[in-house]
Length: 118
Image (spheres, rainbow, N blue to C red):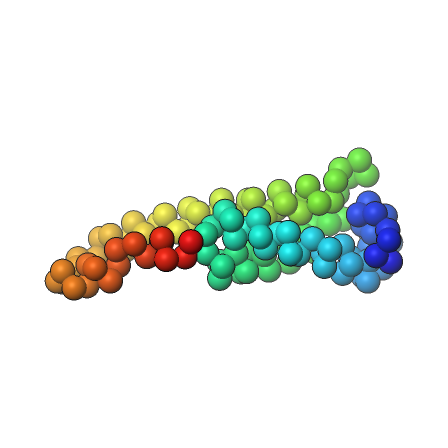
């Protein structure tokens, strides 16, 4: 089944062949993870977003139109998940900034946290 195109796999999946869907998702999982890791600079977040993306794709793949790329559809979901994650992170960081740092030693702990993930 690995020799089938993405379009053929999705058509088989729409016809009820779940193995075809598994092959499609396995084929693109690694690229998806690397894409999200590059966007987030955070491996754990990328792994979580990858899983969320695969679940959403599984729920919606039947909506893919005949002339639409399934891979593009998958990565569009990933991009939207990334945007949602970015908004949540901005809110979380904004709330964290409202918490006063009690002393300079604590301030040093929190400086450069984002750079460590790179």
